[in-house]
Length: 283
Image (tube, rainbow, N blue to C red):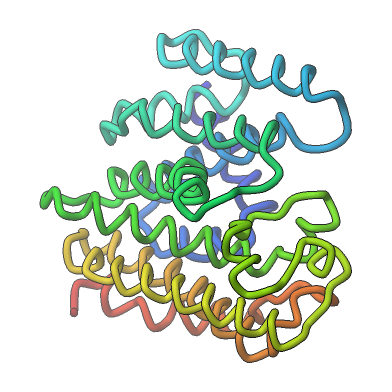
């Protein structure tokens, strides 16, 4: 059962993980499989509330998924990913609180379509991204507790990048993650965002957002030195991928409305190759 569960998670991650799976591949097989199990849990959790349907129905589905997690961590599995997740949580001592935080973040998306302040947005980013990173570093291996703060910063940086990349797509779905107080500060309104207006006010707003994301990338950088060699390598690939995305967003003159900005396969391969010295313990 356990082998089948890990195989299921690996297939799902290979098919859906996009910017993450190429990073997982620098890990030794046991850690790579654990990362696939974590990813599968996050992916299925997110899918639970995606798509059409009443909010009440989605909330019920998420509550059921929470109950299934409770059962899974007691050894009672009702989904094919759960044996692998249970094994990963036990093997790498992943705190349950991080899984609960992810569930809380997904639930926020059911009821909140906008945020007044960055403090509110930070709470959301922590739940849907930092908590994921904090679970990951237990798989990657660390000893210094300072790694926890750096991993939190990394999650914020990656999620802020996601928000900027998906700005147009989210607006089309009625979601605006950029804080209202910041839209007002830069004289750029929700109506303009929905219409995909790229004027000087929008560029100043985006300059500010990119600068803040870079601040969190800088705050996360010391994490690399606190991880095991394999963990250092996977972190470098993941952070490098998303920081490259941020650079690409800026280079496109913030053209996030007419296309989805991404990295080429060759660029991703280059990031993996750059991380190999760390993976081999040379740096």
